Amino acid sequence: MPITVDLRAQREAYTPPPALVIEPEEPVIEEEPVIEIQEERGANVFKEVILEPLRVLTGTGVAPEAISDSVGNLQQVIETTGSPIPDGVDPSAHWLLETQTKRVLAVHGQQYRLVTNRQVVDAYENAFTRAAQAGLQAYDLGNPTITNNIGDQGARMIRQYVYDTEIMHLAPNVPVAFEVRLLNSYNGTFKAGIIAGATYDGIGLTWGGAAVQNFGKHTAGLSLETIMGNIGNALRSWNSAMQSASHWHNVTLDIPDLELILNQTSAFSTDRGRTTFYTVSAPLFRMNGRTALTMYLALCKWASDPAFVQQANRDNAAVVRINRERNVRQILRSDAWATYTQPMENAA
Image 1 (cartoon, rainbow, N blue to C red):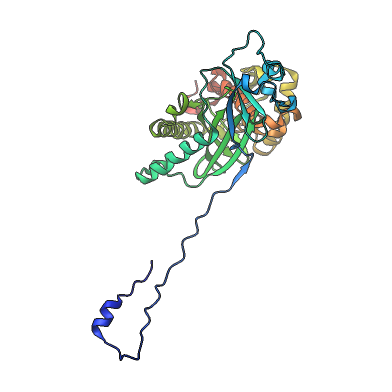
Image 2 (cartoon, one colour):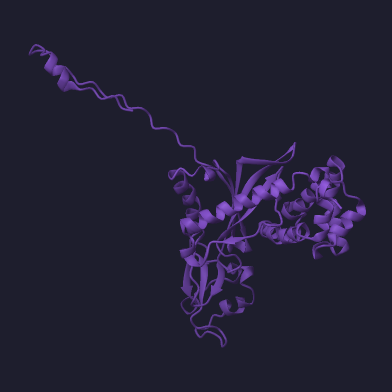
């Protein structure tokens, strides 16, 4: 804080000789505190985008390679160089482009309302700022580690927040950190929203009750009340799931048990699917034993580790994780899983 010297009081107390001039003291200014900015990793999810009428842009020389694969069968329409729009195409259609590269991310009808990644991120992060200002300790999760991912060549955003100060234990040596993935898309595949998760040793975790919570339609859904409600639901879901799984490290599974559990989803119905799972799970089983907890970690590693995604889909690994987690949740909600993982005192 600056030190202020009251020179007027000094003059009243002492009048110097005329030849003597007293220079006022310079106030001491303290340096501003250094604010640590949280570093972000991964892709740039904040590229500028613009929504323009299809008729205006038709024939302006946009190269075919600038068209995202996710646009799909509309690609023929976009590549048309003539001025008329082909029959069967909505004349009010718009296409969404990256402003700088002119890459086409999607084609939309007249009713589409653009919600940018920046709007979604700002709304989510401002909710925590407002909660802190209001003194809501339940939402004080500390500074997260942020990793940005894109899918469909930039048409989808999956922004991961890992809150390392929020820890629960699935076992004495298995600390699990709370995770939120913030979603948005320009091609209609995601609505703006969040999905709760967790991380352990590089493995992204899900559970039976984890599902996408949408913010609502357009920017109206980006309200403080909606977002805080979703965050609160995510925290409660995570807390409940981790407590329910806290005994899994004491549940032993035999090979027939594993096979029956894998049969609960079509993802492992083929020899290739089974082989991939056992490739993922073998090191974990060797290290930690064949328990329900190890089975759970192996399923989540299969879903979340890009190393087990085909090379052609690696750029979409964050999207693949979301899709595969549906299979994992299908297993975790099955009667077979409930039967094998119930606590011993409740077993029939």
